[in-house]
Image 1 (cartoon, rainbow, N blue to C red):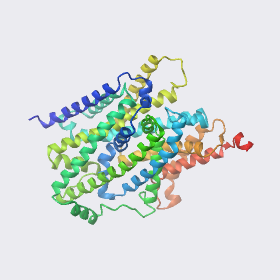
Image 2: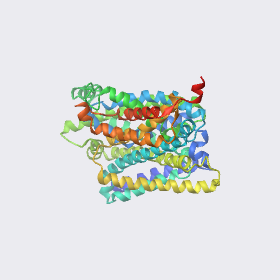
Image 3: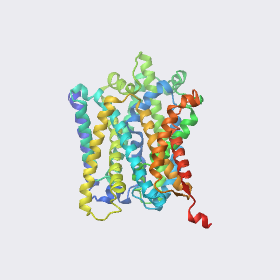
Image 4: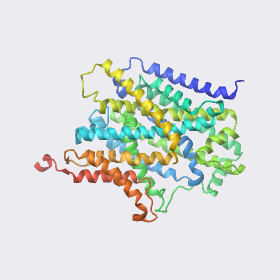
Length: 488
């Protein structure tokens, strides 16, 4: 039998080969249309299923179960908010994107608010997605390094480099057309690992499901609603914050929408979004339930682990090697979709929104393809550098860090799109850069001085709403009625 230390890298290589084969098949005759929008031929049910892996990522796989010990099911308040937000995306934003037949969703801002709003919107996406994706990448690489590669003598820098090279290899050519299929495959592996781990821990506890649920309730691990308004996890902050997080981080995010608008018709894209929203409710509930199982098992044996370590530690140290291998496959499957889609969307946004591939026709298709590949490699290099920085300086929990980044960077996007959709006003010249810088700065100051202003009240996930609201108000102040409105 193969040595365990050899088996895990071997599984990683086999896994990558499977992805590479899928990429080779799906990227045959690939061109710019297939890279950026999948030739508008993606199947809605494949997109819906594959988006699960992209939305959950390694953060959900590791950190969400780990949060149950201290916070019960508080995180599920956010999930309920996510669920509500997906309907706003399906029935407000998707019709807009299909109406204008967009490849980059930020082109809408150009149609409605002008070129400056368009480039600032795209710029905030590039900043936010680069930071958010690298935080997720760092979390999973760090777990794999601690529990696998460090034990076989592979340094962190080499682990990071090898994983990024693997991702580049299967995304460089095919783009969205490839990712729709690879994400479907990886979501399957991730959910399989989740279910197998749940049953393995239930078997280790040697308890029936009703007894397990009763013990979770007795230990406070099923508490859903937080009613203390001063806490960041208050249910209104979570539900409303979750809904706006979805609108911003899915509906106003090129990575997530790039897959949705690769579906042929609006009706199918909406079916994809609604189906996906219901599946996500179930899958997140399973992750919360898994967290309860993990803490029951740990408490029973007197073990203590850091929240982000409880899942990998128990699976590695106290379950069979076979279950640990399945966990590693699930972890890899959670890692790749959250990075491959991000690097593809960032490349697409930079090429279309910043360099103007669709606006400028002075370059040939071959020249654009060469430049696109260089940009793709450039973002991969940025990812690697940022992972090393997070490794050196990060002190916050990963989930909090991701939502903190989103609150400051997606807020201006939320304000810009809301202003464009819900008003017909015309902006003053050159005001967009001022507003897009001022709103996050005002939010930072508000958060910094909140103890003096609000006492024990702590700003949580509602920061995104506040940021978007300030952006909207400033845009409204520095705008005027359109000539069409005057005529009416």
